[in-house]
Every structure is written in structure tokens, then in C-alpha cells.
Image 1 (cartoon, rainbow, N blue to C red):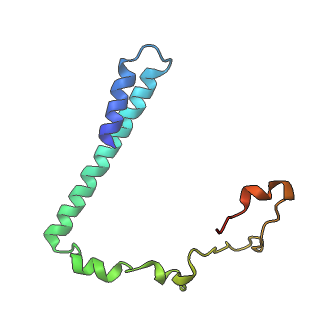
Image 2: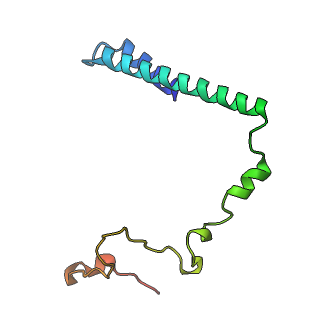
Length: 109
């Protein structure tokens, strides 16, 4: 992301045709710096965890990662299932006016 923001910053920094291009260049340069700082921070955290022996191995990740979506969908054989949010109106079949029914019909042949 930092590289992309620097490229955009350089583009707007060279442009004199767009009003406010210098401001856009400065904003993207700030974003690039923020991404670089965040990347440096996360790399240092990983190095500290590696040195302390606290990084998870591949086997550990397998224990915590779900092996299929069926842990969420109790009935995967039913296919995609609507889960309404609390307070949502009851699910039902939509009524389509006759003149538009051809737009939503399914030809099973």
C-alpha cells in the first residue's frame, strides 16, 4: 500500500492541471508513511515473537482454523441459508407483479 500511495503522490505532485493536486500529493505521501510505519511495527513484533519462541507453527494453526464451513452452517446439504438479523421482518416469498414475472422466472428445462 505504501508503494501505491507513493506512486499516486508522485503523480499528483507533478500535475499542475488539477486544482488541489499538491494537497492530494501530500495526503498520499502521509498515507504512504503511515503504511510504512505500520509495516515496520508489525515486522518488529514478528521478530520479537520469533525470538521469544511464541509464533504458532503450522500444526497449531490447523488446530484453531475451521476445516469446513459446516461449523457455521449446521446443514451444509441445504446449500446457502438466509440468517436474518435480530428485528428483521419475517422472510417470505416476494410477490412479483404479473407483467414482471418473466424477469424472475426460472426455466428448469
